[in-house]
Image (cartoon, rainbow, N blue to C red; front, top):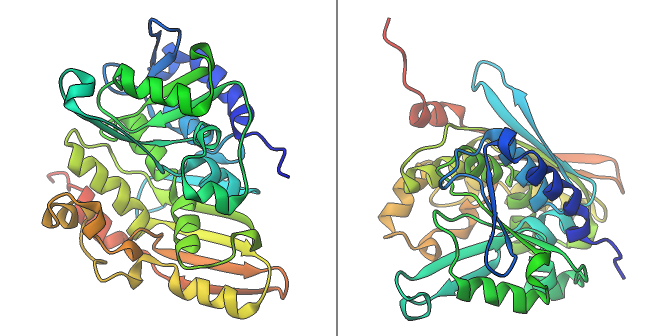
Length: 326
């Protein structure tokens, strides 16, 4: 039985976010029931620093996200690491909880968001939690939503009910991808994307021991589709991940070969272009694309390391960079 609580692990980080709200450029309010709602980029400016903290909150306090100055290929990178990567990334950070409300339910515009972060483990609505054999029992929870407007009351009611929380025990953090905080916390999912792809490929999650990753941090775009495209491209073409595993060499070697995004038929074009081509339907995109560009897999059972894939920083520079006039 896993006694680690991702919600308890994130609590000190949430308190830091609330305490430093002004410095981090986020706005904090409570709804009429007492639910704490943090605006990290809708009406408030947000910040990269807020995004770094939200990234660690998403990982349930089981991971570290840091900013690093890069070399000549791109100026700013994110580094992510965890010694409990499966629980941090799949049991907490993964955006796997679908939350929707119709126009009739909202009294206006329909709402849809994918919830990520520790509160997912309280609700346990996803099949993934049965596979992980994990369920959190904390009395306080935090959920992150990549949205450009606050969730309607009917969605908040669902989160409270499914998580078994009193209103004062729930914190919702809103991070539109077009904001600095939103862009940062999405790129901070580079390790999570690798773990998700490893899981989809059938690799035994119990054999994953440690993980680290890095990806270039692009400027956020005011256009929502372009912003989403940049964060995905950062991982698909600039993401580098190192997984430490145990077990057979053949399984480790196969993982290193199958994991990189270069295996996808959609590889080589900007994500925004691909997304528009499929009429904004994620399910029409080749699932193999959602992976880091380059991976290393080290097997502690044998001491061997395998490498697969390669980054394409030339593509990212063409997509992101404008040359200054002479």
